[in-house]
Length: 106
Image 1 (cartoon, helix red, strand yellow):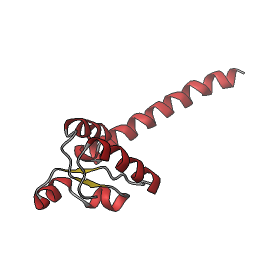
Image 2: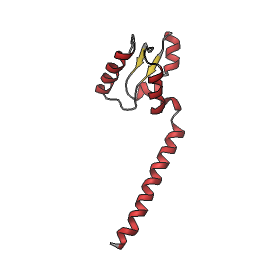
Image 3: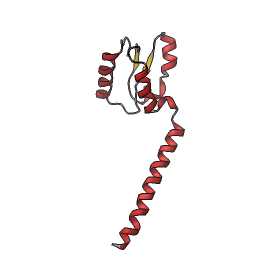
Image 4: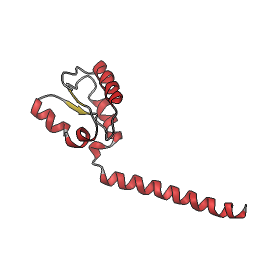
């Protein structure tokens, strides 16, 4: 029992340290436009204006720049692709966004 009382706080400290390190590295590694918090804010700010929607998995997530695509198509573009987006997730994103935005291209 005494050993458990000694080991448990050390394990807890290690888990907290690893979680904090992971969050810090992800904050430095991922650009702000790919951060989920910024994506939620962008969805709220562009409500009712998005004409082009980008959905898909990691290729669309990292390979499509919504700002550049929007300039080329002359429309407001929102990239909602995630690194491992299942097909059903894309469907629900499209369904939700088509109710609040005049989506013309996906």
